Image (cartoon, rainbow, N blue to C red; front, top):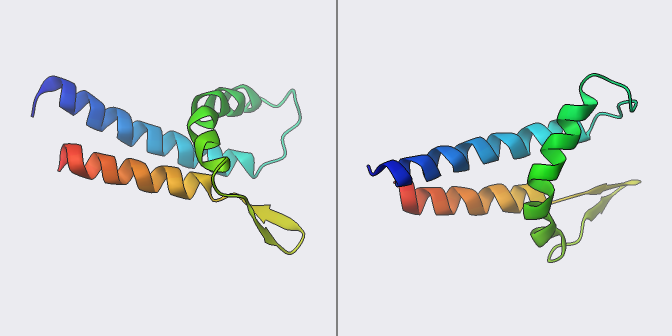
Length: 88
């Protein structure tokens, strides 16, 4: 595998892990001064622009009193398709 293609494959894998990590951290209601808050903010700044593309296309599903955001599922699914095509 070419070095550039290998880099892209690794990048896509790391990006999926960041999305999953951000999803888990987004469930936590942390105070502003919590030690994990900077990590949560950093991850949001990295993954939110990509997920916002899908948030504009698919509205959250109402589940009881909460809303289920499907954008991470759609975003990860699309990355898996692209990674499968590029990386085999």
